[in-house]
Length: 156
Image (cartoon, rainbow, N blue to C red; front, side, top):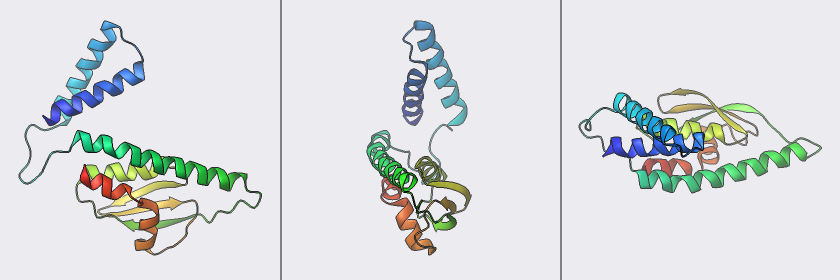
């Protein structure tokens, strides 16, 4: 089931990137998605590991988009302000996410939002370059950067 879900997601990405409904493009996309899924996703679940949920991944998209829009507006405001109110720096945040794919989704989500970029991941610690460091304390900085994304990713 997990392979089918990933195959479907990859095929949709293929369709979005090619923008073509030609039969050759569709067959190539299906073949490539199947090959990637077959090679990258192990068959069966490891003991104690539960598969990810496609509906919950889709439910994460609006949460990410909200954070993306708010971050874009914040960076635009800072750029247009004549005083350029920034306080750049690198902060360490700790995530409660345990699965590597969850931490990867969080790190990529942080990087995709303007004003932050994930520099390094060390276990459950992430080092983030932040355009406006509001607090150097890992707990408070993490709460400001991760917002509600971490909880939504944990549900995936």
